[in-house]
Structures are given as C-alpha cells and as structure tokens.
Length: 416
Image (cartoon, rainbow, N blue to C red; front, side, top):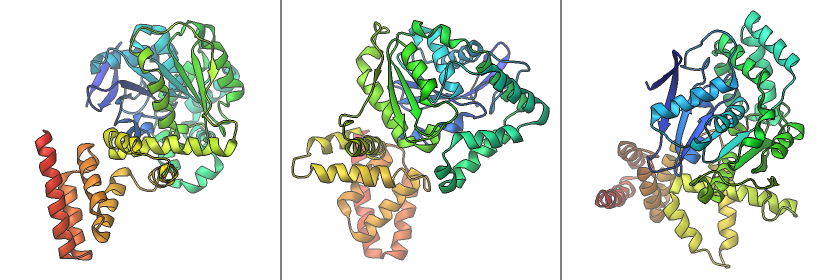
C-alpha cells in the first residue's frame, strides 16, 4: 500500500490513470475516506489522472491526537503529491476537502494549475463546531454520523438510494472519533476568509441547490465574491454532490478544466472579475436543464466509448440527426448509464450480451473495442459473456460474436 509520511504521520494515497493526463488531487469531506470519489472517478479517468488520499485521522492514514489545522492538512496533501511524483495538480475538494484545496493553493501556488471547491465555506460558527467536537470525543461517532447523513443527501435521494446512504453511514461509523474531531477543529479554526484574495488561479465553485450544510447563500456567494478568478456552477444535489450527482459533477469539472486548459498549463493568470457560469440557454429554464443533462451525458459517453469515437460522432452530426444525438446523450448516457444501481462494468457486459442476442454487430464491435481499450472489462470477462450467450442465445450467435470479438482483439494488438 502506498504511504507518504509527514511529521511522523503516515498518509495513505492512491494514484490512478495514464501518466500523460493532467492530475486531479481529490480531497474528501469530514469523516470520509478516499472511496467518497468512487462514483465520480470512472467519469474522470478517461481524461485525467486521479490522486486520492485519506486525510490524517481518516481511512488508512494515521490518527495523531489533538486538533488539526487546515495548513497541516494542506501540507499533508503536498507531501502526498511529492510521494506520488506529482509536481503540479488541480486540487478538487468537497466540504472540508474544498477548504483544504484552497489552503493548498495558498501554501504552494506554483504547484496548483487551477482548483475546484465544492459545497464548502470559508467561515463557520465556532460554537456549533465546539459542540460537535465535544460530542464526538465524549460519545463516539454514532450521533455525528446520523446527523451527517441528514445533511449530506436530499430526502428524495435518501429514499431512492439506500445502498449509497448505507455505505456512507458505514464509512462514518468506522472513522476514528479522534480523527473526526481533530479535522473538525481544522474547520472551526480556519482563517481562509482573510487570505482568499491571494489565490490567482482559476477556481470553480460548485454548490448544491439542496445543500443545507453549506448553501450557496451565504457560503458559496462569499467565496465567489472573495476569489479574484472564480466561476460558479449549481448542481441539483445536497451537500455531498459528488455522490448525489456524479455525472453533472464530473461534467462541470471537465468543462471548467477544458475552458481553462491554456491558462492552467502556464503560470497562474492575472486576476479577473468573478463571474457566474450559466449554460448557453440559461434564459430558458427548460433548455438550460436539457443542456445540463446533455453536458453530463456527454461526459459519461466519453468515459464509456472514449474521446476519439465521441469526437468523430460529434463531427458527423448534421442538422437532420442533431436532435436524435442530443436525445440519446441526455436519455441513454445520462439518465440510464448514470443510474447508481449498476456500475459501468456491469452495464458494459449487459450491452455486449444484448447486442449478441439482437445481432447488433456494429454496436457489439464498438463496445468490445472501447471496453478493452479503456479497461472497462477484461478479455477473460468478454469470453465469459460470450460463453453465457452460447447457452441462452444460441451457439450460432455466440460463434459469430467470437469471430467479431477476435477481429477487434487482432486490431487492438496491431495498435500495440
């Protein structure tokens, strides 16, 4: 297991993705380990390298006693970057992680290309946090965990996705109370508001329309006003937007980083007025909603099929078929492929079996190629799907599928 060490504290980290991709440093919320990003990670990996860590006091990292400080958590994140061989990154944090992302930019601006701060704040009421810290240190995590669940998700999401809510509850209950309290003290004692004007890199602020813990008014609005080069996007989610709305979350991050690719590859840009990012059709609410779904669906489509194929498909769009392309991107790729009930690997394998059953060989070849190239499944798993199809669909169909898959495998081998 990879660990970094700083001041005698071991910090667990994980690095995923191609070495030629820009690095996103993913920073988790209070009480959460690096698995908090599991729903977003598959959507970002096709375009970015992901560096995740368990903050001190959390997950597999050590739990030093006492109160922690934001500057300390930022120094830990920089130590993890050093251990992973990452010189520059885009910190992307949610809740406590958003405050840490801002602190990383203040501590080491030359190592930050741009940053994303989601559902966070620069000022809190110390009295509220004193009570939470006292309660956790005296009684353990149960009371804090149940209250955190109530703040983290909207009512509708909690009712529809009990498995996700249950996983977060389990994560919180297994967080060391001393680590939780120590990190909570970092939030309580933070002095970010005094220093935000020094951050010159592009900043994306993400807020949840149903976030009662750090609502845009006043939390996000204060950040937007204080940061010289900030933009804001609202997501239909509560506090943990990366869990409740992973598709729109990843799409907003990708769109922001694409727009700032030239600036973030160079020195931090000169200060610009803060601005509110709106979809192109924001004046029309229904069109704005459709545009948001399209953008999120396009991100999923790229994650499953790859940039090259999607770029060719978009280039071939005509006035005759553009409505159809927009519809499948919103409905198939966002509405269906982003549902939390099945992971992407399972959905890929189901598509293969369905294509064999219906003889959709062009689609079959596409999904075999993209799945193997992007690590969506293994050659062994592909073989098992076709063996299963031989029993339930028929030997002739499976025989044809093996032939089609073999041609794809040979083509991939020629590509190296």
